[in-house]
Length: 156
Image 1 (cartoon, rainbow, N blue to C red):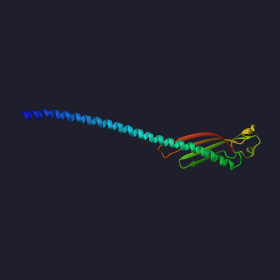
Image 2 (image 1 turned 90 degrees about the vertical axis):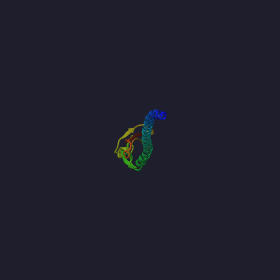
Image 3 (image 1 turned 30 degrees about the vertical axis):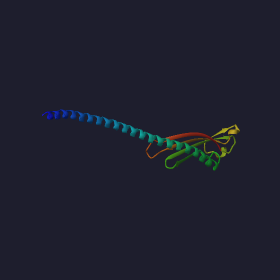
Image 4 (image 1 turned 180 degrees about the horizontal axis):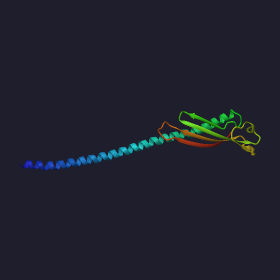
């Protein structure tokens, strides 16, 4: 009979140990789930930041190329006849260039001008172009649009 009593006593301790093991397992699962959710959130934010940074850097480089392209177009036309350029690059970037000219009094801008220009009396700044370059990146909906603005003075 004693053996039977001993069996009953260990049975009570065994069920208490099983309950503690179940509680510990639930706590471990909750901790692991929290860590995994945090990791997923940080991974998503990092991907978005990387994409935004890439689009921004591409916009900066495109603005430099757009200034050179505008200078090429200016050199192919009559002085002061080009006031703005609008084009789309790579189905992602909208480029808008607005130009204002700085010319010496009595220059060719007086006859060919279809845009804004400023007449000056100081001959060293003759033939300069003030460009406002706006680059807008419109990705396929993965991030918000990125807009980059650059103002530059070029000598034509």
